[in-house]
Image (tube, rainbow, N blue to C red; front, side, top):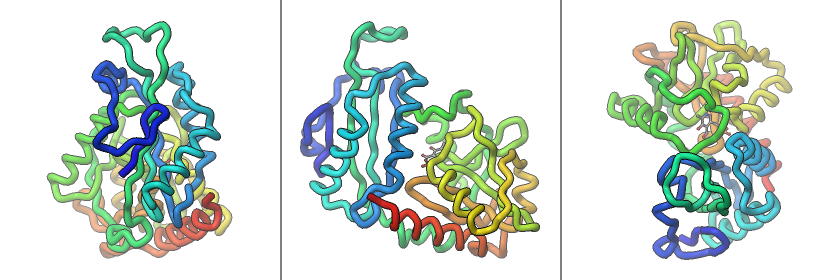
Length: 282
Ligand code: PLP
């Protein structure tokens, strides 16, 4: 596999970043993950716009223009022959002698790599996943997509060790989101509920697209917080993210939803999202 590091396309074994990179020492960096279908990028402009907001929130500069980033992504997709998969992009503040305050003049590091994945016919999407609820111990600016992912990693690991597929994180009695995805329920009355956009959650690019499709298809959408208790009484539940699209949740803690199979609303939204994403990929 060829990866991109600070201006060069190199074989992954030869790709290097400094031990003094602030991404490595402080988690001082931001990232984006875009899906690739049919060799094309899904929702690239929205991902780059969010990258811009994340960088601005951390007072970081972008080492390349957004157009250049898209060209690099396309070149990497071609070089690695990615038809279906993801492309990961990371900007860290750069290399400087270790100190907590920001260095005066530093060039940000840019790393981009691809991962081949089965996204369309992911067997997990056909069966659905189970989730467990865990306390949300992350920082209070989850709207910034930083590489500081240890709390999310611990949650996912604990979920897997306990036989579940993911964790739904809970703060002050309400679900915030999944470890790396936004969380939704469908009430018995057919209303789609997902948490409103604040600093408490990442503003998912897939979330925005799916809510638009849901409204266009006549579903009622409520953007508000819900409790694990309400989720356990729901008709359906699902998650969204760039790499999982719309994935059914068929069990929450010990409560089986929808007889343990993906529900009709979730399945329809997954189909609508994939159709739209493929049609608009570029
Ligand atoms: N929430 C968190 C914490 C995430 O890490 C992600 C994606 O990585 C999402 C939500 C979903 O966002 P998107 O749809 O933009 O991939």
